[in-house]
Image (tube, rainbow, N blue to C red; front, top):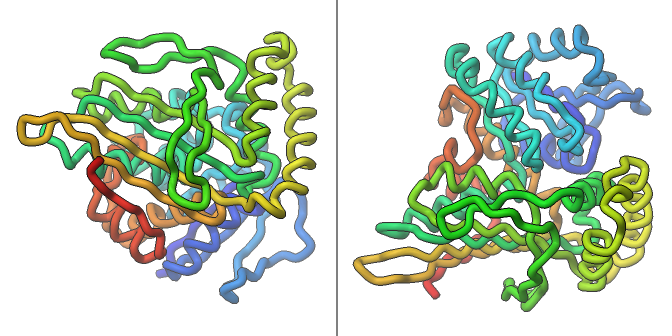
Length: 368
């Protein structure tokens, strides 16, 4: 019997990238959803594979429940997740259907974790944050932590060129991340950090090289300390290319009044303006992504530093590889872990490396 995969928000840039990856690496029957009718009932991917399209608004709970009940795996790509509740996950658990998402916001991840015990009891494997960052980045950290006898510090840096090929959603996510200070695990205790502060120049692989990154609120900020309890510091920083976007974002974070940045219509205005700007700059910046994981710890009695880097020419495409690879392992029965988990606690390093190799995503690992 053919596996049935339901991709919520599958018509968006990231959702369609997830669908393409699953179509390439599995024989699953794929249904994607959108809030408004498409031009045609079925959608044909570049691979030639046909997908079904279903008009579905997440607010239509009965229709959503019916769609989930007729699926073997549900993948939630309908962001931005700052605004989402965990109702899709709740229904998946009720229906006994495995679940993935490409969420990237602390508040949503916290909501999802409240269903851990219910997922275990139902035998449902639910994995959150499965895109590129968080997602592939978390697995890079797990690989690096495993090189040590005792890991002490994790430093994650992300860089996105232009729009990242992810449409306006990535703009909303960026500006939503500027609204409030957040807690970070530093020197063995939780400390308050201001978003887009403490600029740091980090060496990424070519073509990005030395680029500026800033503190940014990501789910990894609190999932990594939980996954690796011996670690005393977890730093998550993000930056944009071209660099003048970083300075504009800094102004939005530190100069604009806080009450203004916390208004939804202001977020929409900034997101649309930024998206129009990237339509121009994408032509010379590209839409790629770079991830750099640096772990400090003790190896054979001495302090050492291990680094992993990844560059991909399409941020949305890379996110599709992250979620798609985990979907593949769930469908093949290679991954089963009832509960609600972040990627770093669910996916073994062996499976992660297998997925990256099969997708020709080259990760460079080296001791510093």
